[in-house]
Image (tube, rainbow, N blue to C red; front, side, top):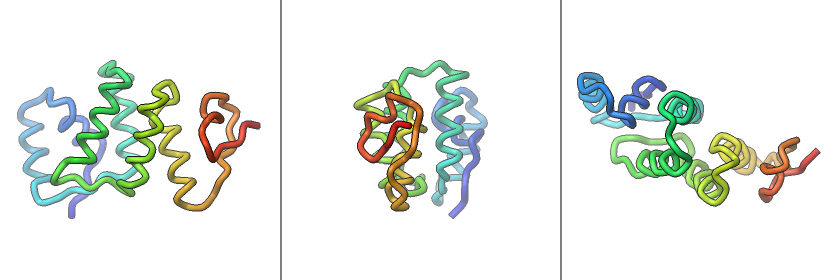
Length: 126
């Protein structure tokens, strides 16, 4: 299985360059892996550069989770983080993902100064 970088994943999600979309789809046609870091960077790009709303970002994550050729690192963790993000989009997906990665690794509580993040089960506000 191939791995993808942020630039390729952004092209697949945004679909703003037909040649690159075609090349990206051909590359992932036999299966491609998306790391947490690439996922987080892609979502940052969607927010900061493409001004996508929290709902649009959540929908993009959902499409990636359901994509036939993409395998997201720890897809179960990403799905749990998506549930948190959909219920509290002001948190930001990355905060939700960090919490669920820590939970899976058995390293809770997650210490935070962020009062909104601290509302999630498994965190401790300092």
